[in-house]
Amino acid sequence: MAKLQMLPIDQYPAVNRDDPIRFYNYPIVGSLYRRRVELCLSELSGGDKILEVGFGSGVTFLSLKDGYKEIYGLELLARIDEISSAFRKLNVNLNLKIGSVLDMPYPDNYFDSVLLISILEHLRPETLDKAFFEIRRVLKTGGQVIYGVPVSNPIMELLFRLLGYDIKQHHFSTENQISCAAENVLKRANMNRMKIWGLRTYEVGHFVKI
Image 1: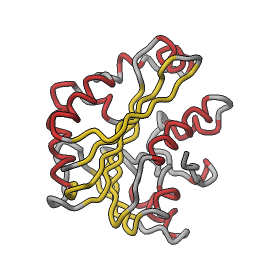
Image 2: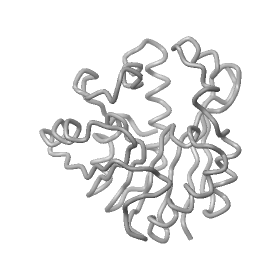
Image 3: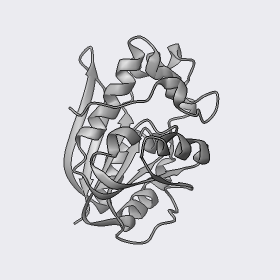
């Protein structure tokens, strides 16, 4: 499994008070947050250009720089200038924009990889097809999309409740709805799953454009 490389937590510009970046330092919960990211990173093949949709505070960027020449990011809400400045000091140059996966500001056939970590579950089920058509559009032929989504079960609901979240108020699409939408337009390459106490808690999908 790929190892997540991170800055000290206090060097990440938090998006807002609800930014999950703070959880990475928590006991037990922090290791789970890192592990789900590492599962996603392990599926990446490398290449010239990667787009991360929903990059947040930039947790993956240090890890992505070793596998890709150019790193792009798209986010609905982010402190782009601060994030770019923090990573520029480490010779990690980023191409960040504000925007949505439903209407991405990039040309066709542009990226080798598209990465979405804990993003797609926040979309309404009726918008998933549009999201994956957009992802397919910006991918090169043979390119890959890697996504990670939480699995709906009592353990996940309890963990989020302990963190102060009612996930039913934030997660609208299930892992099965998301994988079905992906298979409508892309070819499945792999499906990896994280388990806690024998129950699936996180699912990582790997699909390719053919």
